Length: 162
Image 1: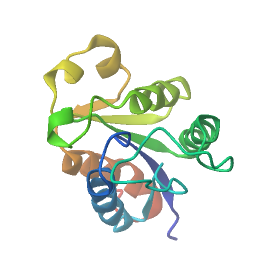
Image 2: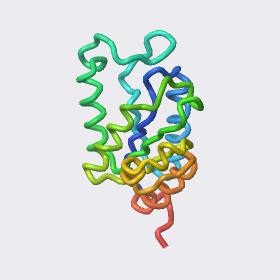
Image 3: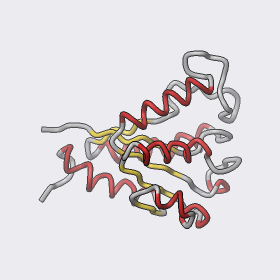
Image 4: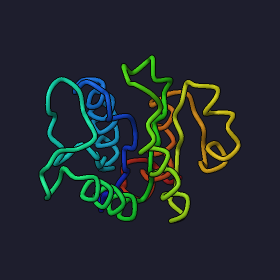
C-alpha cells in the first residue's frame, strides 16, 4: 500500500529571484516523490511581482502578511516533517538569512515535527538554538533527502523497512 507523507520546504523567498526560490524546491520535490513523499512549498499561491519576491501583495486571500503567515503555519502543522534550508545568503542570491524560515523552524520544533536543518553557513550550524531545534543538521539537500527517504519512506512504501 502506497501512502504519502508530507514535507514542508522552508527556505529563502524574500529578495530571491524566481529561480533561486523555486529551483531547489523543485529538485527536492522530484527526489522525494520517488519515495512517495510529497513536498509542500510555501511559494504556492504567492505570485512573483517584479523580478524578486517581496514581502507580500495587497491580495487579501494570499498576499498579505497575515495570509502568508497563516498559510505557512497551517502547512507546518499539517506536514510530517520540515526541511529548514538556511544557506549562506550569498550562495542563493538572497538579501539575508530567511527570517521566515527561522520562524517555521521554531513552529516545527514546538509542534514536535521532524526537522532537518540544511546549511552551508557555519554561523547557523553552530548556533546553539538553531542547531538544537533540528533533529539533523546537514550541509546538503541530498543528505536531507536521504534522511527523509530512509525515515518517511518506510511508512510510504518508498523505501525498504527491513
